[in-house]
Length: 124
Image (cartoon, rainbow, N blue to C red; front, side):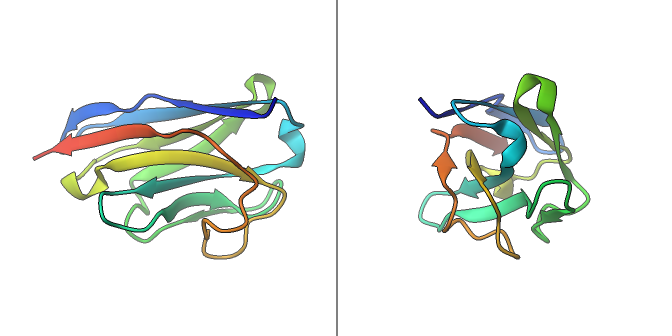
């Protein structure tokens, strides 16, 4: 059974940090690339950080560039999203997703597997 399980969300004050984790199982971790997406109430799901291909560069949305960093640990089948200098506008449900390839711009369409999401709330 394919699973992506996110964790690490929570409530944090503006300026604070959180690290999200996404642990994958049920498929070959090394053969896939991963993206982090978020969806705020009333808004479309947007790509936050994506690797377009294995060993490729990471795309970051302009709104998070310089504050968020995506990384992975193949030994643990886990990807991470380190979020620093959080702002109230970062409040959303954050999802990780996996695909064989992610198109430029990190679109949500085309992702093969999705996690259930983890809520991040940033208070002002």
